[in-house]
Image (tube, rainbow, N blue to C red):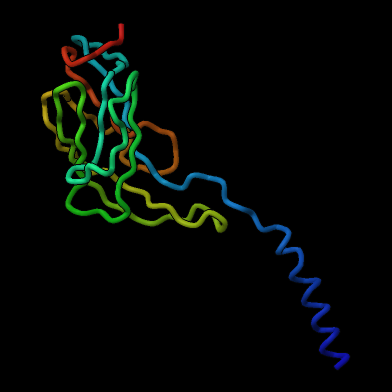
Length: 164
């Protein structure tokens, strides 16, 4: 009986510090595409601001990410955890709309033991309409927890560009 008590005390001493070091995760662990909005003027480009921006997933109107938002210079949005053929989004400003299709591969990556895993993506292709969008460029194909810009969306200048 004395041996059992000694073993229990020994185990409590060893395991006790592990309980004190437990960390609660306060980090947002959702990877998001970071897309800046731009306009080209001949050979130059500049940031732009759009008003009345609505952005949601194709066939998923309940996934409304921006709803007639004002003063938008960039949009951030998640991709699904499991990649299909592509992920589609509706990009609307005013009465005009385009569909953006993002072709990507997905995989799980450990953030930390306290935060768990996140899904990271690699964008390998794009498709888009041309009512609002002139061109989309992939500037960083790796969508992860960093704040790096992944896409440059070039807007047609006649479509609600408010930047000077």
